[in-house]
Amino acid sequence: MAMTFPALRTSAIAQYPFQSRTTYSTEILRFVDGSEQRYSNYGQPVRRWVIQLDRVDEGELSALRQFFRAQGGMAGRFAFTDPVTGTAYANCSFDQQGLDGGVTDINRGGATLMIRTNGQ
Image 1 (tube, one colour):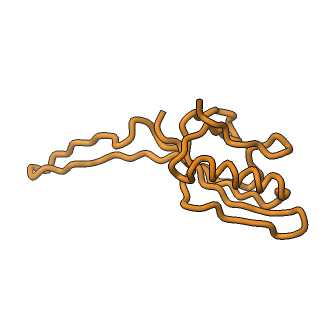
Image 2 (tube, rainbow, N blue to C red):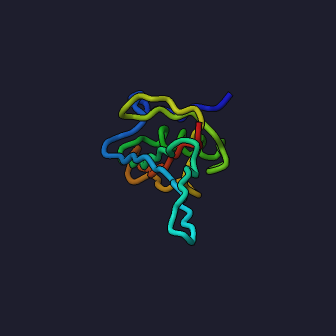
């Protein structure tokens, strides 16, 4: 059973603002006679989120770091719920080598998280 991305103590997944996008990949082969053949490189579109957490406490930041380590960084797989649509994606991973961020003030920290779907 895959782990689930941890919610903040407010039960939210993200803080505003954050970014999300959908990526499609189509390969185009052009032949000498000028004709083309197109096909999709992905079985489904890839969803990506960049979540900037600027107001998390030390406990939340620690939980995010532990989750990142438990996943083995980019190697792990986990469930993630889109903060806008509420759609649950069962097969996601981090899209970054390390977890950026840290404590910025007393009991206050921040982190930047990049998450992507891995095809469903």
